[in-house]
Length: 175
Image (tube, rainbow, N blue to C red):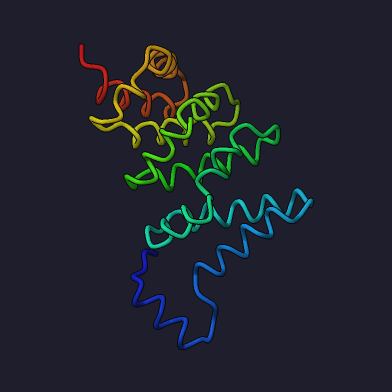
């Protein structure tokens, strides 16, 4: 559910709960401090869920969660990659986040996700690239390598992969 700053403030005052930034900061700190892989996965999933709501975008940027999600794409644990990719997919619709992802080599990291055998990782990578394309970012995303990858995915027997690849190619590759 999308919330307004006023709604969140009113609810916090009613309940006496700490503010959203403090809560997100405690999640990030716990992620950094724990060595327990299951705890890290749960925290990463929670951060990805907070990335759905635009009210959290500034907080997540300030806490370097966008970078954390990008970093997760190079992990050996497939679940870390899946949750990192999902978090990026949730954040990338906003222009500042989109620019940050592109400027911090996020497109290259996302491209590495296309070799995954995990369908959710590939779908989120495709969706993220679709959201990242704008007239200003087009040259960074519509590369021969990405177009070739999308053409290959368009031949998939998986309808979800095939449909997203078709959308990407129709929207971005005229002729």
